[in-house]
Image (tube, rainbow, N blue to C red; front, side, top):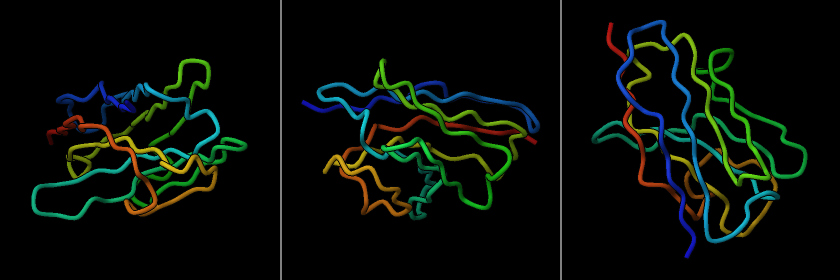
Amino acid sequence: QVQLGESGGGLVQAGGSLRLSCAASGRTFSGSAMGWFRQLPGKEREFVAAIRGSDDGTYYADSVKGRFTISRDRAKNMVYLQMNSLKPEDTAVYYCAARADGGAGLRTTPAGYGYWGQGTQVTVSS
């Protein structure tokens, strides 16, 4: 059974940092593109960052570019999201996602991913 599990969320003051982790189990995603999304209640899930499966190329939403960094550890089957200079508008539930077809290409919409974690809450206070 494939599972993704996020951790590392919490409450932080504006300007602070958090590092989210996503642990994958049930299959290896070392060659798959993976991504991070976030969602507020009543809103659509929003793309944050993605990492390519072939060469670890990355892509970011404009709202987080320069502040967030996505990375992966293939040996541990994990993906990370380092979030710096956090703002109150970054408050959301953050989700890790992986392409179900094992494809390496980046995807920036939820429909591009078939596996999801349960989410971790990030709250940034002003």
